[in-house]
Length: 332
Image (cartoon, rainbow, N blue to C red; front, side):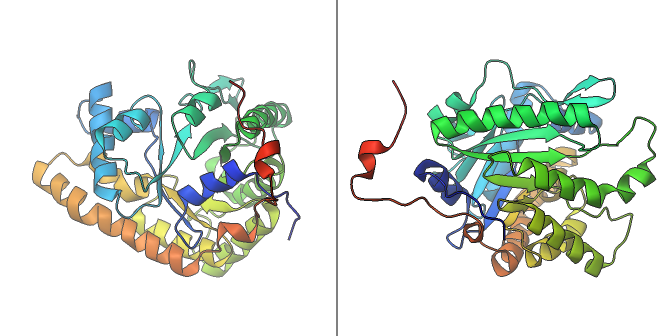
């Protein structure tokens, strides 16, 4: 196992809040903005800010008893759902830092921080963690260096604030003319190398794509070996994102990932997709009240049974007598 530094007490507490008592992440991601807007518009449903918040409120309100935490956005959900009561005191809260989407610069995909938002504001509102999504391909070297520098800068600020940092990496093709087939074939190498590089930049939790695309193989032994490589490459605990796959596929992926060392999940559309797409009122209500909570409970059961606690890779810093005298805190 790679040696990692112990966590300061604020970052340690933030990860505790996002996990179950066993140390497993069972986090529902509802921070989608651009994707959710497109889903609603495709279904012919309203997609204005009030409608976006309403959908998120329904999702969180139906899942807040079973999720260990939620990943929310600042524009439509984090403060809104805290104030209205759907986000419970028992739910850990991670809040997105980045603007939705990316800047396309000659094929490179670059992340930017949401204007008017900051790590300090996420800390001030009482969140457990800052979340940063980066589009990243280690073979696109110039863009990779720029994204790595962004992670370093965010890490420095979150450490100064003593708040945990979750980083999500989404890979993309190595060249503008690369076919999807070729891209999916190299997915394993890209995701594992991304984990190796990005988790060395001072982050606390790695939100990872599944390293084998279902179109490449359905062999779960291959899946397992790839996930073991990812576990070995990551210097911090990692949790599996759902990337929009169907629920049954995601449940299989999660079981394999957790057996191979993942510390749980940070999943979105695989759990709640129909909450945005279903237009029949009766079917949608049945989904919200029955199918969607059942899906989350199934994933929680898998994670709690199979996952490696996040504390297997991280430890709390020593707390000596009089620790409070040297604890940096925040400068007012």
